[in-house]
Amino acid sequence: MKAKSIKGKSPEEIKTALTEIMANGFKPTLAIVFLWIKMDRMAISDILDEKGITIFGATTSGEFIDEVTEKKSAVILLLDMNKDHFHIYLEEYPEKNYREIAANIAQKAKTKFLKPAFLISGSHMEADGEQLLFGFEDVIGKEVNVFGGMASDDYTFTEQFVFTNGWQSNQGVVVLALDESKVLIKGRATCGWKAVGTEKTVTKSEGNHVYTVDDVPVLDLTAKYGGAENLSPDNKDLLIEIAANLPLQLQREKGDPVMRPGLVVDWNDHSFYCSGSVPQGSKVRFSIPPDFDVMEKVIKGVEELKTTEMPEADALIVFSCAGRILAFGPMMNQEIEGIKKVWNVPMAGMFSNAELARATGGNLEMHNITTCCVALKEK
Image (cartoon, rainbow, N blue to C red; front, side, top):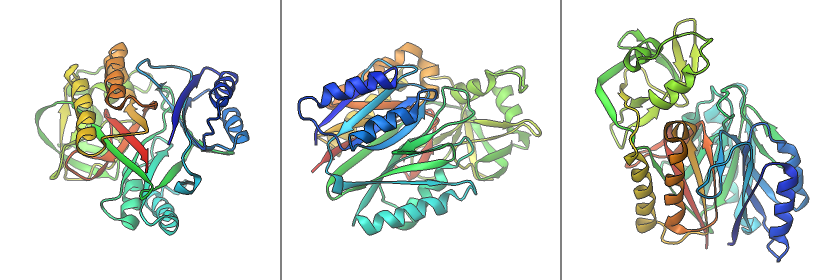
């Protein structure tokens, strides 16, 4: 499988770049598209559709195809994968029946491929990505390979979109199903955030809605711990500060902890919604703002993936939490460059609202403040 990456600041620039890259006979069949929330998604979709290219797309809080991060742009990973080896599925979940929706998709993919694997992206701030993962597990089994990230919206925390040819949704999921007997897919999710303080108990929660920790409203406890001030809906920087610098770490009996920052605040009771479930009675710890050794851990994790599971790759897809670039700023380029050098193949990446992958030594999880690297190789 050949792969090539392009980028542009407008549909016109994308059209020009696509024309140039196809001039020498390269005929892509699949496009992984990450773009700015205000970019004309349907115009870019039409450009790719005219060339017969199937689209897996999501809006972002930043994007990249090399070590330099972009803003207000579109990046596209183009693959000439055999069309018999993949299929796109799309569904909406206005009833918040995430697990059922994912299970239905998995069932369809199971009838098409003997051993399907999945790349997924979902939209809407209240969507519980963990329930989506459970839906795939229910049908395919615990060892199913599922990777992806939740769509983002340039830190506005209002409306995100996933899309494919002629379709988009601000409350849905786009799924790329792969025939794993023909396409090898491997991934690694690495966080590296350090926990601090004693374990605390989630005393009231429902799914991904956390009300109290140690019988204190979770927003108040988070603010007290982190020294956050001006707990008001008028403080537009508060959510970013909580998500990027003060995430909860949900402790697991098996595998590494997973990050659960607050993403949507209910100001009536100072509770907040996380992107994944936080069971009542579970244990959490707070995090400290990251050091730069966090980036080194990510790169080492990807190097280990190459050594142990994926010696060669045709292409790389990266889902990195939007909170990471807020924490690291321009230094984030070092992490991306380090990842790119591992296989040195065409790459496309996005800064997402959450990341979906198997935790190190654990189960499929919805992650935050994490980088998920996904390598592909057609057999």
